[in-house]
Image (cartoon, rainbow over all chains, first blue to last red; front, side, top):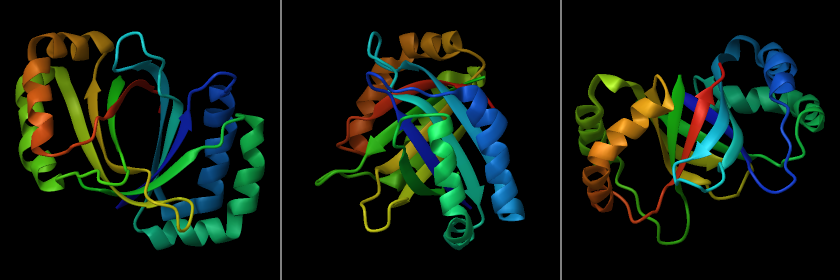
Length: 103
Length: 103
């Protein structure tokens, strides 16, 4: 299983609309990826692990696929639609990581 | 539910021993946090979402607790033991984020 992790870094002036992300963006992702996407998860940043420091990420989204090809095939078809939706909920350019789920 | 996310950034010279992390460090975390820790997960960085770019994080660890207090109480007691184990598997200073699990 692989996990696509989408991290939205916190910084002065960065905005993130969690209601849109959960209510509109993720339902769209589920629609375009269909059965190839096995699960999703969303975190809302609360605090840094270092007391007094700002929270590192305003939000982190997770998309699970059987393998990288399943993600890449979906992106080939739907990347334009997905990217066009991002300005509706954030002005942040996300960091995108592909990981192996070790455990 | 809250999630403590521990991110190990990738950079020139950064090292990470996944076998130690899964085989020694996480078992130690489970022992010291006990029943207060509800679940754990580990990701191994494979690739960036941007083709050709380096993977952003070599590894990401996740610790789930009912609330922040459950994590903080465990850290009060065991932070020294946990921190002392880090040099056994990495030379990276991790980014630690506390998140609310939205979904």
